[in-house]
Amino acid sequence: MKVLVIGGGGREHAIVWKLAQSPKVGELLCAPGNAGISKLARCIDVDAEDVEAVTALAAQETPDLVVIGPEVPLAKGLTDRIEAKGIRVFGPNAKCAQLEASKSFTKAFLARHGIPTAGYREFTDKDELKANIGLFGFPMVLKADGLAAGKGVVLAEDARAAEKAIEEMMGDRVFGAAGDRVVVEECLRGVEASVLCFVDGSAIVPMESAQDYKRIFDHDEGPNTGGMGTYSPSLVFDEALEQQIAERILRPTFEGFRADGLDFKGVLFIGLMITDEGPKVIEFNNRFGDPETQSVLRRLDTDILDIFLAVTENRLSEQEIKWNDDRAVCVVMAAGGYPGAYDKGKVISGLDDVDEDVIVFHAGTKFGAGGETLTAGGRVLGVTAVGATHDEARKKAYDNVKKISFEGAQYRTDIGIVYQD
Image (cartoon, rainbow, N blue to C red; front, side):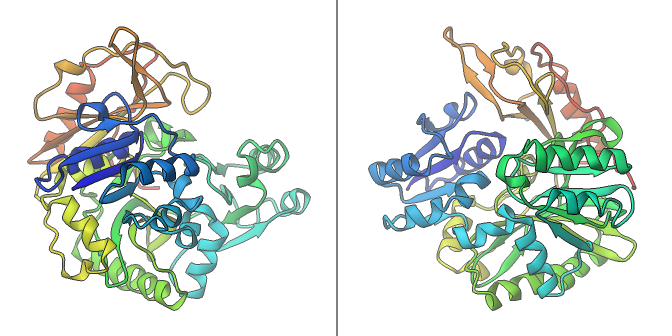
């Protein structure tokens, strides 16, 4: 089969890496891809967010399957556009993509179907929001309603910080139109965890659990990023918690999709806070998480193409999915200055020095004129190791991070440590 993957980050590298293992994949393409992906697939320089160009590419290449990685093209209706060409797509349609593209849409869905989440209120007027600073106490959780590359959430510790965040979101519009509506939430206390699920009209099937680290600095300090590392399985999960998640969150979510006419086909990423009252939903995303995918897919034994095809054909309930018992840890190496302004074009060295069983997923890289690998994004690499134990995987990941270097490189040193809020 001929498969086209849309995107060029670490998540897409992990998806391409897994698809490349399938004996059923004859030709593998990726748009736009990156330096790491190019070793596994034919990369085509088309912007993933340009739905017109991607649709034209799909019509030209006529793949048997298109897999859409990032959230923006999903929100723009890329699935609908490509399916209209008679091409099979793994990824939700525009109607379902609102679950990530609009936080107010998701909060209303959760409330309507009795799914545990934080209390909330939404605002479209800056002055009204400022008049309600401290609505749920502090820290005050402020979320830009629309897509903001994982950075549109601010935890303001006091009134001054809240006013600054409101001015940036709704006055300066640092997140563009995403901040025209701001959702204020009750601040949940506990341990964060992520559950990625395959979903179609027949079933919702959770993958192995993972934990992400959003803040830029150790000890969960500093501004939010797209994710600085992850590990799988989550150390906070046990059989009782998994049962709670299945009964309180997965089942009513699946039933809610049916009740609301949401024909979801793809991956539902559920961000959770494990509180004293049980698991509560922080967010929904419509695609594989990044960097959760890098650690989770290293533990998948089933041919991922079989799963993708089952989802597109509404027969997920019949598809067996097997996972191995390895522990996986992914440490993100980011550019200096990220998540703020950062330089690109720095030479990366040491990529050929890592252990044979360690995978370095490329998130923001490109080739230079001389064939050298250069930095090309905020998050640059995801060094991903597996081991028989969590500690073994964690040590191996960090041992190999130290073998790689580029000017300004930064990374957290505490990926895999659990912090109780």
